[in-house]
Image (cartoon, rainbow, N blue to C red; front, side, top):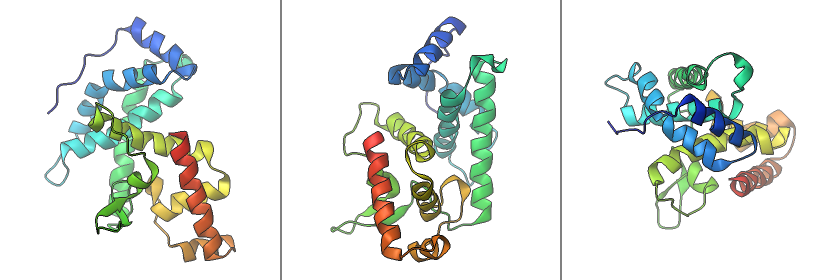
Length: 205
């Protein structure tokens, strides 16, 4: 198990939360890093022989990032209390989706191959090739960012196509033809919208 940074003091946390509201990415990252112990603590109760702890922490981190993005100090509880519920919900959603179908597509699963035969993941399509010094943590944060951006920057039609095409948020993945039938548009049009939506996500990361 990794050693995580100690939690922020109430004063430091309050300051970071105020900066997050102004769009301060550094404050958001600080809150994420300083609450990773909480993620590990919540994830620990779901650990079993079939689940790797690192994977559980990755999933729990998505819940933490969502909590930081939506938390309001007038909720009447500290961020840690609110975040613990969000982390727990994210993990529960993961297990429900896993139980629902073994074929669910996640951001980690392959969606094709490149010219050299290497697997390409949805995350590879959306993310840039640049690697941060904290590559592992950044990758986890990027997953949360992608999921957070989907309803924020995509139109209703784009969001419907991306969510159902790649089985995000626990939905069942659909083919372009199934989506085209559902929306009453051509498969090629679905493909164009899908490409445009992925480009939008890439630009906003």
